[in-house]
Amino acid sequence: MWRNTALPTRILFLDGRACLPLLVFVVYWSWLTFYIAIGGMTFFIVVSWAGLTVSSVLRLLRRMLI
Image (cartoon, rainbow, N blue to C red; front, side, top):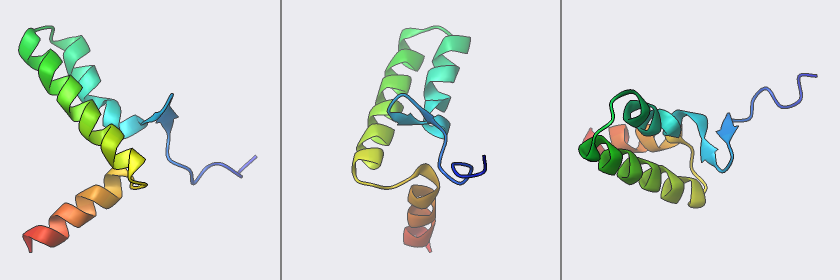
């Protein structure tokens, strides 16, 4: 029952937190938000393909800024 609770939430092949750009597009329809959503989802797909999660990428970016 508790076996998969530590795994990241996935919607098909994309991390659940990476679907936030898609949610913004669904709420506010325009071509600009469509392009932002596609770009954001593409970025997160590449990150997922590299074997990282959204939280690890945010930690990596924070470490690079400091």
